[in-house]
Image (cartoon, rainbow, N blue to C red; front, side):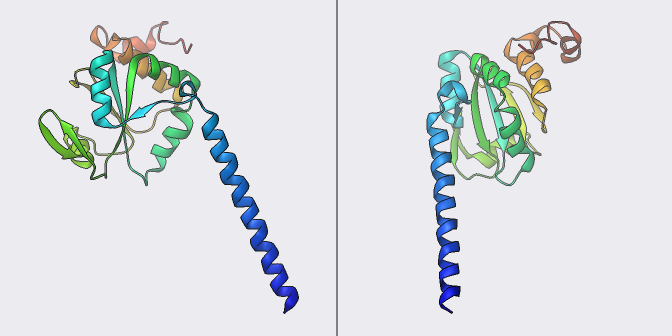
Length: 180
């Protein structure tokens, strides 16, 4: 019995040490990141205000907490160095939880984030919504995209090519093929 208690205590101690190391290393890593190392995400209200003052377009990542593809978009696409650079140069990035009851202001109306997502016509996740700096609609794209393809979309919209050509023509042009 005494040896069994000792074994249980050793296992508990090892699990505790492992968890402490995990949380300490994760916290240390997050603390070492600078704003250039990650996309600066904003709430909808703050994002709209910043877009107006900085004359940048809005990129709204509409997600849910349970969405696996949303998490993959965060881990594989929004963490990509080229994506981060394009977003920082051309957009104000907003996260919008399509199931949240948090209130946002749209014009003179108050709605929750879930209602705003529905009003934007979002029916699947992730969906990326693009708005002009004054919050007028540009387009929305449903679903997950690989980083290279998403970079082309970001350049097409961020550099205003959508105003003068189709996406297909832009994508096939030699200019769009550049990833740097």
